[in-house]
Length: 240
Ligand code: IPE
Ligand code: IPE
Ligand code: MG
Image 1 (cartoon, rainbow, N blue to C red):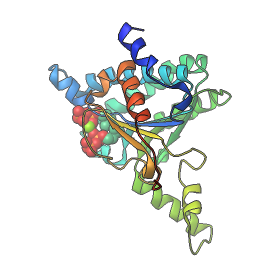
Image 2 (image 1 turned 45 degrees about the vertical axis):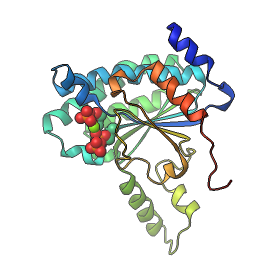
Image 3 (image 1 turned 60 degrees about the horizontal axis):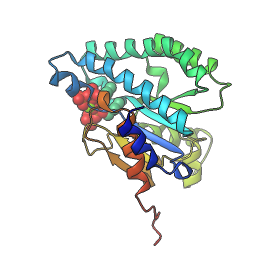
Image 4 (image 1 turned 135 degrees about the horizontal axis):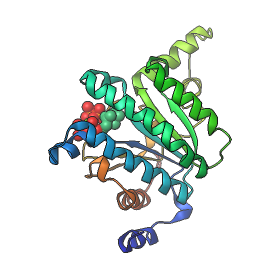
């Protein structure tokens, strides 16, 4: 850890950490473009940030980390980029499972997973199973995820169950995140001020931190800064 990182860490109150951190990992393409590289190189560089943020969350004892890896809208991208992203995902799953296991990480996934390529689904299921005994950080990957679709799926399940009216609890209990607390902290990288269809229901009272860093540049230091920013907020939940 660098001196700067150590200094930042001293400003974090470990007794008041967010339980659930959700991240919109944005800016891979622009990171690559700035360097005159193809977009896929940005995505590849971004996997190093995933590794590091997962490690830091584990160290701090943060319980849930949800990463927005592929949105329902991302199918609009060129086929080559989608294929590259899926390949990278399979690669990550295959080669990170050992390190994740060593760090006591449990893996989960949210989204319309059945529409992902079969190879991705298979690798995902295999790894979720292999890591299910772990008791540390719960790493939740949002894949083919859309917040509106999630709510529609929940309502459809309720209808199929014969439900005629719903309440908040019923909807929440049928979301992909039924057994996960709402995010305390929502981070978006690359300086964009948008939700982009991420955890629409769950982020009702999340604190939002926008980092100017492109995702491949978002590392330990930037994550510590997000936590310090979070701890400077007064969460009122509509009260006074
Ligand atoms: C985020 O980076 C990764 C995914 C959405 C899969 P982008 O690919 O959106 O990068 P920019 O926003 O074009 O820079
Ligand atoms: C959001 O980023 C989706 C993910 C990070 C997976 P996008 O780059 O797709 O979002 P927009 O298009 O800028 O809103
Ligand atoms: Mg983007």
